[in-house]
Image (cartoon, rainbow, N blue to C red):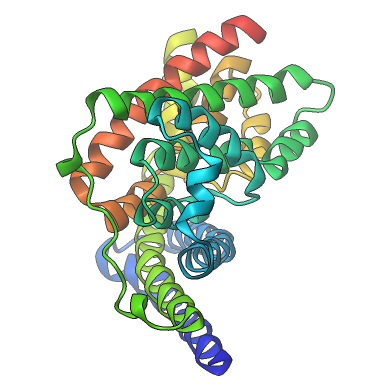
Length: 321
């Protein structure tokens, strides 16, 4: 049984050769880029993919373990039955998962599959990559002597996760959300269920990770740096510019604080928006959500989350920064 699980994990890493083939052949065949641009595309694509795969594997391991070994009664005891109260509890619980958005999507899908209210699972999905201890420590290191930036990121991100969860309760419709289908091994033993869950989640989500990484690398090459410099002087445009940049760069939440700190030409509030939006809405994450919960859900959810994240960043930045 353990040998089968090892085979699944090994098979999952066959995504790496696929990613390498796409990295080497894709731009040359589709875009006919010159050599410097091709090398930049390849570097960005490889960085995003290699950065995301370990956390994706971690998330699928957690997801499979939850489905196979954790009884539903545990979640029923921890989370309030009222979805309105369950949302802030689930949002605050995101602090215990040291992973990025690649890990949060399969975990949230597993929680929904175990009967947890979608609003609570979605709140956890947003908060886990944004307020976990690794991210907060990285932010403190990236902004030395600025504890207010760490506090602002924590407050703004937690506010977004709760607000979006409550909005789902008020405005969300069940037909918008395609819940993960029960796995074939659900009636088998626990280790067999774990193996089946790991195989399904890692291979399924890994493909969308590669697609998202390709899109992010392409945007990095196409959008010129001069466009960003032109808007840095406007308080409102700078916030929107860095929010959009966070979506297309798809930097892992453990590293985005260092990217934000390097954008010294932008205001603290704009850099806060970069760090709040990125872990919740980026091209990689949208692709993962579309593959897990359906395209209709991903479009609506990412649009609402983006708007709420920008608003929260502006308000918290005005208050604390």
